[in-house]
Length: 104
Image (cartoon, rainbow, N blue to C red; front, side, top):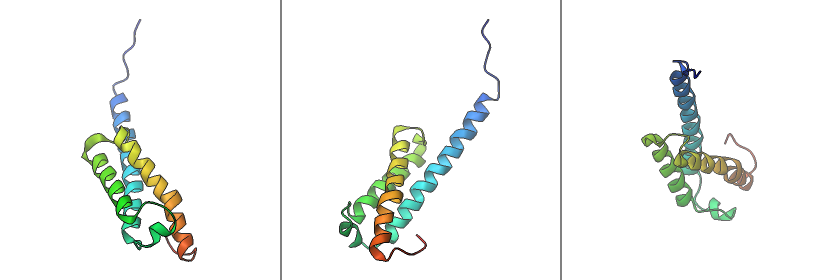
């Protein structure tokens, strides 16, 4: 005997995808704002992509996530990965390059 899924399963899925979308956009947005506010000459000094490259990657991924591809699509996952790589690697390198202190 086969049982149907409970009626609320679609509501639960919607809430989970909404939470994931908000988290993805926060990660990508924080990374994008940080990349925009940094000096351009600091990026080559730490041996990473130039400032324009990071801004382009983060902006395109954020737009694709916003346009409805969602956080669990290929573009959304690449956007989350790019944002996390920027925040966990590039941002730390930029902070260490300046003085190791600061809010960001």
